[in-house]
Image (cartoon, rainbow, N blue to C red; front, side, top):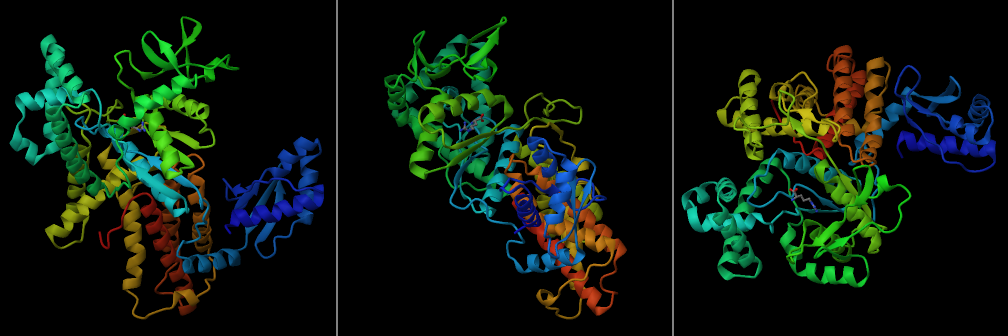
Length: 583
Ligand code: ARG
């Protein structure tokens, strides 16, 4: 049980004693530590409902409250209840946490199956920095959900069946560079795509030729299918290289093409059930009836001061199917085959209307009990404050962004590292560069834009991955200087100095932070917690000598050091970040 859970259950019993019925209460970590460690505004909320005096209610509740030896409670302002935790409680918690392989993180997701749909680049189109956010966020959310006991299924729903294949097939037949393809498949496929797309824009006959290649592919032409297969295979090789570098793995790669067979019968079913209808030759899903609030109806948009239809198209007038059709089929598959209770889509905020429509359709086809979330995110900006671009004005390639970060990390490592060999330094630069990119992503609120500034991301003194990794290395280095074996599990820490208590307070919060991330799918809560923890550690380290202290005090402080290192390593691993042995 976390401290919040323990306090909430005691507080709820006290309210029950006073009010004669059981009520829901909330306890949160205090924003301002001068008032206590935790606080509750439940007396105010409940007094308002009952039209009684909040302060009087809070006083009665405190009189009835049994905190045991957890700590003390008092009242502030109009009826806030503040809790101060006793140092011995933090000490006992630290000891228990060190003995727990989960480091105090509760299991909250047992029995729930969630599909995390993330990354999902489009084959043969560039995997750009927009996909970087999805890949890093999605991977971290999957790790966190897994740690909390959810059954997690990660699925890379790649775009492997789109109009781009008409263009690529045409370019493949006309100007493939086989050597380049061998050396860097993603790059060559991208070149083919760009070449075809530019040529088609400039030349009507090429545009038509591309369209015909697509029609042939969709009709099952052997040669075109063969080219398509090669493209998928080669992209997979190129993508795997990137995912390896990022330490990201998927349970499944069920791209759009996996659902081809399901689309025609799906549309027939939607028609038969009256959920979709014909409109100008296409089949579409419309708003159903008169919405209470048209602004909340994803099938309507406002045009010239009036609400007009904004249907979801599931079959084009030429008989082709849409992105949306595939997403409906995919959702049904995830429910029927994987028995998913939830699906989280980690996708760019620009697709928000698409997902609102998809989730509305899910209700209509009987999947309304699923927990469906569009986990949207903002844009990565360059240091000029505009969306990140290459010098030629293109969207930067993910692999290039990683290379650039690693190159900058190599410079930083050369300046400050104590490592001996070039090989070790190169390995460290790779780890630090990629960790820096990941941490910057995860430390920001996912909906806000952020600036991609390598100097800031790599700073050893800053809100960065290297700062945290270095903190771990420093925590651990104390143990290298120790010349005896100590059984830390047997030590009950004694917390006397303010800096020790403060560190223990943050350590105890770990088990509260991790589940809270999934309330709004915000790994930045964890990233920022880890920074606070590392800062608490550094203040402690400044104020409290460890190895020079008397044996009892030393051992107590060693528990804090060991636990801090473990929580930092565990927390970073949930962000998909590893720690080097040395830096
Ligand atoms: N391939 C899409 C894109 O790059 C993202 C797919 C997201 N997942 C989904 N089930 N729609 O924009």
